[in-house]
Amino acid sequence: MSAVRAAADADVDRIAELEAEAFPHDPWARGYLAEAVRGALYSVEVLVAEADAAVVGHAITSTVYEIAELQRIAVTATARRRGIATALLDTVQDRASQAGAERLLLEVRDDNAGAIAFYEARGFAQIDRRPRYYSDGATAIVYELELTEARL
Image (cartoon, rainbow, N blue to C red; front, side):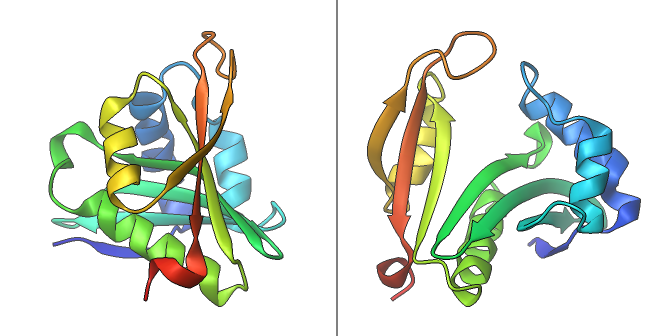
């Protein structure tokens, strides 16, 4: 079982490693992650998931008024299929709702079948596509989840 908590300064190096592993084409820079963890980026929250006393996943969310955006979610390859992404997403949804968000948005690469299946199974609906969105030219699919209905 994993525990989800707010990220701390001591987690930044591990989050940067996870970024490079999960998003090899466009990882967030360590300095930017450090600012996010410190709370220096308006509206941004960084969560980490721990299993066996190690950080094995993270999620980064921005919430502004009624809209929350899941900017990043990643679980290390060796810890996948153990409910960690679900625990992170549940926490993201709860915290976004508590902050007053009514919906949660995210983008996912159109070639990431596993992530697409995960989000659709969780009730996310496709609302748009963004051609050539990623640095390597891949298309993004934009998903939305109504938070007022998601956790009933």
